[in-house]
Image (tube, rainbow, N blue to C red; front, side, top):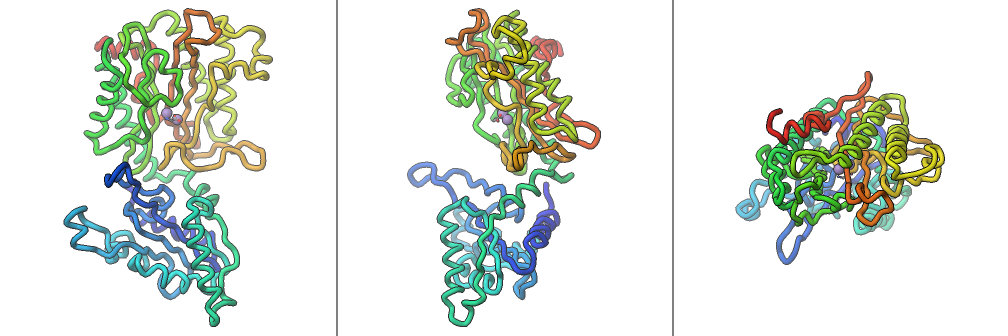
Length: 436
Ligand code: GLY
Ligand code: MN
Ligand code: MN
């Protein structure tokens, strides 16, 4: 659980970044309608939550250094007894100050009246420019309200600036408390992956393993961090397969990419295992290449290496492996240069992980790959996908394998947060034989 003090510290950091001549404004995302009059369960926007700890819709965060109302102000819904009867307790203005440690709070219904006052005299307005066109226009409207006020027009802001790059830079380094949440999130998902391996039987349906995943993580008050992928046989070659409605066949593999969200922090884990508990010769050959690629990538997922280096390490092992099996022909260097491996490995080896599964943060700046640093969290997820209609030797067609772990970069090297899920062929087969 991230404490209110940590959220407050982040707001103070933003105040320092923007300076005394500026104001920052962030809006909570709206509730999403699912269909008819039914909503999706509300999940706060990650940037807004990161700075506020507030998980309610209909709220505005204002960071306005050195002003009479307070440096950090939350506009939120006033407690409404009628609403509480239907939807449960609300944060309210008092708890925004008492529990979330804001300097001040106002009723969100007063925002049109107060925002121009807060903006008056500020040169720059920082906000999530381009994220929500309606809100972009709202910020311009408040700015023009100041500009049209004949007593204050010379004090209207004259620069609108994106806050996103500054927040991305903060979010990419995880604090001790965030790392604890991410470890918990990985542990919860790991337990669920183990359960799925233990429960899997030929003739089950993909959705039954999905159900096992949901059952297991829900036991820990967690929900999926993205729609789970449960792909049996050649469905594993569909990278974003989410139908999960086919029967699992004896002799096939099943690829499961499923992560948990705990306290809004994501894990993102993939394992691929045989439906009947035993890898065939060809499945084991491909699996071992992917595992070796992941091991090679892990060696380069350390402080001082650049983001591309762990991808390049995985590509090299995968390309060599595909050559060794006669799935590719020619020499290693040419195949790498000509990207022939991309017929079978068409995605990057990983991404930032945090509040979002594909977490914010740049991968390259001015054409240079970002350097990995302590407290960054990445995924390492090499794969090989040999579609049923590919040109590979017939015996390999329809095999899709990915192995994905969540990795914390440390001063000394790295820590695999998702290490509790079995990964080697021997470990998986032993677990599925139930003699682990
Ligand atoms: N589960 C999404 C991904 O692996 O990137
Ligand atoms: Mn991933
Ligand atoms: Mn994944």
